[in-house]
Length: 144
Ligand code: CMP
Image (cartoon, rainbow, N blue to C red):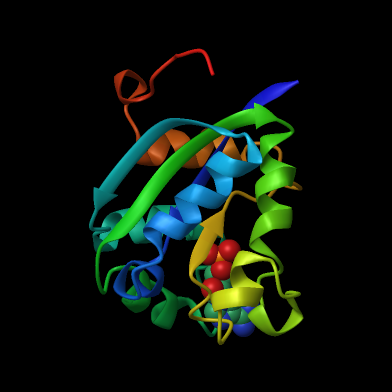
């Protein structure tokens, strides 16, 4: 079944010039881009987006990092898109991510892991994150 998933190149990925490579990987895989936005995340959006981590020891650092520079937010569509993207990204910790995955190829540490994707084990995550970053008219229906 086709589904939409939220993906974001984080400030470290943008700074290192990885947007193009990351977009290419998803395009080549056969996923369909239905939304994209180059933007800066403010404090409020950071707190909403990472609300589940509020109170954890790494939370303040996470908010500082994600607001430190522009991000590239995207919505990709395809069969089992959330799981596909998750596989291509690798594990949260780049050290656990095999070469060939985005974090395995480009990531260095847990805090600077290049990319974010919605958690496929969290039922409402995609919808919640897509709604947080995009208005419905910013998402484009088209045939691939
Ligand atoms: P992400 O998938 O964007 O979701 C939360 C982020 O917190 C995670 O990627 C990591 O980049 C970051 N993070 C920093 N420190 C930790 C930690 N100790 N455990 C989990 N996530 C962490």
